[in-house]
Length: 214
Ligand SMILES: [Ca+2]
Ligand SMILES: [Ca+2]
Ligand SMILES: [Ca+2]
Image (cartoon, rainbow, N blue to C red):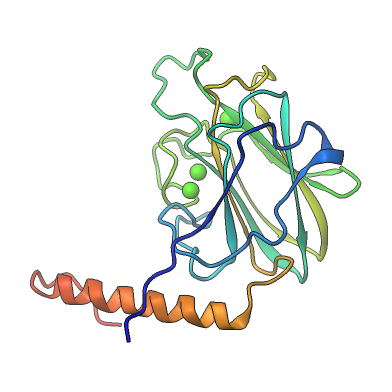
C-alpha cells in the first residue's frame, strides 16, 4: 500500500473577499492538515501536519481598502495568522512604491474589538515566524490563544491605500480546533502520509547520512 502526502488545499480569492465585516469571507469548513512548507508557528516550526489550517490565496484579490475574513473556534485554540508572499522583494530604501504589498493585519472578536494587530514581523532578518513564504518583514504575523467563539481577521495596506491589482498576498490561517474540525479518518490518513514521506526522505538521505533517527 502506498500513502501519499496530502498537499494543503487553497481557498482562492479572485475578488474582494469582504469589503466590511458584514460580508467577511468565511474560513469555516476549509481547515485541513495538508502539508505546506509555508505554514508554521511563531518559532518557525512547521505546524501544517499538526494544526488544521487554510491557505487563502489572495494573490489576485486586489482592490478594496480592507479585506475581511471570519472564522470560528470550537475549543480554546492556538490561532496563527501568517501573511506570506505580500512584499515579494526586499525594499532597500524603505519607501513604499505602488507595487509593494505592505500588509497590516488585525484580529478582532465578533463585536469588532481589536484583540491583536501587527504591521511587520520582526526580527527583520532573523528566524522567520510562520515557516516559509515571507522574504520581507513587511508581511504581518499574529499568534494568539483564543477562547471558543467567532472572530474576524482584517487585512489592509499599512499606508491605508487601497489594494491594487498587484497587491496580492497569501494568508495562512491555522486554528487548533476550527469549525468543523477535520474528521478523524482524514487526520489518520494525513498522519500516515506524513510518516510515509518521512521514511521515503530518510531512505533518500541515507546515502548521505543526513537522516536523523526518529
Ligand atoms: Ca509570513
Ligand atoms: Ca508562512
Ligand atoms: Ca506591514
